[in-house]
Every structure is written in C-alpha cells, then in structure tokens.
Length: 220
Image 1 (cartoon, rainbow, N blue to C red):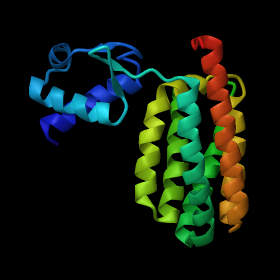
Image 2 (image 1 turned 90 degrees about the horizontal axis):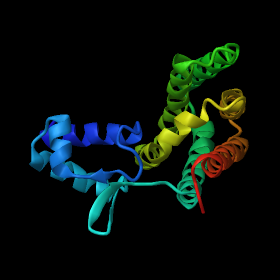
Image 3 (image 1 turned 90 degrees about the vertical axis):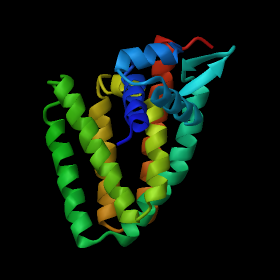
Image 4 (image 1 turned 45 degrees about the vertical axis):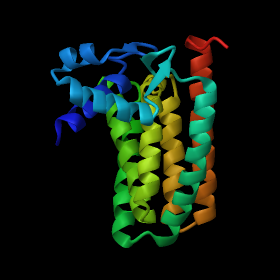
C-alpha cells in the first residue's frame, strides 16, 4: 500500500471513529505530524477524502464533515433504492452454499439476542460484525460489487452515529428481528418480500438516527 493510501486509511479511520470530530479544522501540516506521514501523502489523502465527502471546504478552511438530518435522508434514500433491489436479487439467485452461510449468520444473530442484558463494547462490536457479514453476503448473492462499493461509502459516512445508536435500549433486539425476517425471505426465495422488508428495515434505522440527532445535538 502506498504512503498516500496509508494516510488516507488512517485519516478516514480518525474521522469515522470521531478521533477527528465533526467540524474540526483539517490542517495538513498537523495531520502529517500527528500520524507520521509526509505532507504530500497527506495532501493527496485529504483531496481524496474531500472528493468522497468526508472533508468539506468552508470559508477557505477544510473541516471534518458534519451530518444533518437532511444528509441522513439522502443517504438512506440511496441505500433503500440499492439494497432493496439487492435483497430481491439475492433471494432469486442464492446458491445452496450461500443459503448455508446466511443461515449461520442469522443463527449467530439470534444467539446474540439471548445476551442483550450484557450490552458491553464487545457485544456491540459482535453485532456490527454480524451485520456487516449479513449485508456483504447479500451483495455476493446478488453478484453486484459496484453497488456494494457505493453502499460501503455511504455506510462510512454515518458509522459514528450508528455505533452510538446501538446502545439505545431495544435497538439491537429490533435489528436482529428485522435481519432474521429478511434472511428468512431470502432463504425462501421470496424476492419481493425480501425487498420490502429491507426497505422497511432501513426506514426504521433512518428514523432512529434522525431522532437521535435531533435529541442529542442537532439544532435546526
């Protein structure tokens, strides 16, 4: 991996994890010193992150992007359009091997639901890993890597909020139920049902995130 790619990955990680907080000013010299990269790799990384929307220019300064409810509406409108179709396609062309893998993931999700009284950091991370495996498998079933790349970028943009959302009472249990229903529809080859359930699941996530933003830090 080149120095530019390494710098990109490290700065992106800092943004997604809130090590670099929303609204923080981005100074290339300071980033180079902080993360131990030369100024040229950092400059190239910052340009790339700006193109991807993680850094924005405002009043001749570069800053870490700040999400507003309107941004979440836009992100999830795209996710719903893509992932509903992916779920339908996955249900229509899943192989036997795919179905066995999906059963495993859903089974582990259900096992996790038995431990929701102990929602520590490891619990949340385990859920996030299973959630990623579930959606990654659907893209594989649908055989659409380009759609997966688009959604991966969108997911990074709100990941720091998603992690916070997972500690809300009952949210993981609800997500497990929603994923189980989607999984069952895919396993049964019910494409239209899988599409509808995915759309509803993403709508629920969107509404929860917007409610969280409005409650804790968004001022219209």
